[in-house]
Length: 293
Image (cartoon, rainbow, N blue to C red; front, side, top):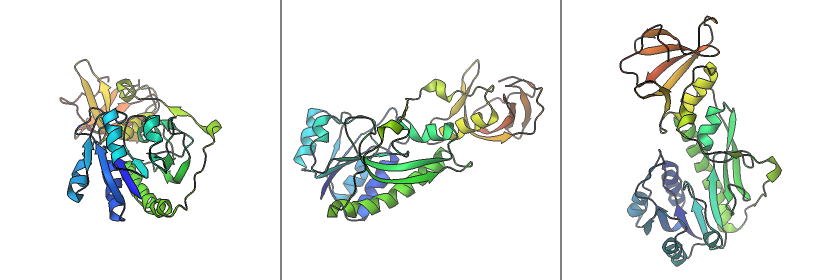
């Protein structure tokens, strides 16, 4: 079964390595040389080069040249794991088995953009790891393989990303033999249960201390590395915050945004409910006790 692999993030690199580890016939790899918007960008071509696999660098997956390159490699299935463009009909119809995509949610719920970040920012306790057959919609095709993924209170973007990669690795090892043998399932999604997460912007990463301490904590852990970080707006600059800790035992008559304590580089700030300690941040110089953020 000839496979063309598409991807340009760290998850893509790991998934390709797994496919090769189980002996898949990767006929070609498509990736990017750089990305302006993927914080977890990875040049998957380095894996292809090491294994002697033909590789194409492109910024337009639906471009005529790209489609012709893929057609020339005669794929029976295409894996698209980590590519921020919708796939056009010409490419969707090209391989015999279709195109398999990936989404870090329990489809049909939570289709759309930034699934890892939204799940953490919203304080969800579970998400999912779903491989599905792509169609012309957004994450709306038949499900190939799906597993629920718990989110611990201590999880952040880094740890959840690792959970995603480990879970997806096991799923790939499970469904690849099924694809090769033809003994796989296509489970249609119940579109009535679907919702769509929107694209996030810079304003979505701003910490407003009128939020509850739990909301601030969730926002910080959602946007920590490999993502750009949540931030506090000051008169001079946006200050990144990478790690925070909740405090519930705090005087209720303090205004949100008031700096309650500065000690050993840690900054305690009152929130709308509770308070947070900013443990890893970019404040230089440090604010003083009694200041407002």
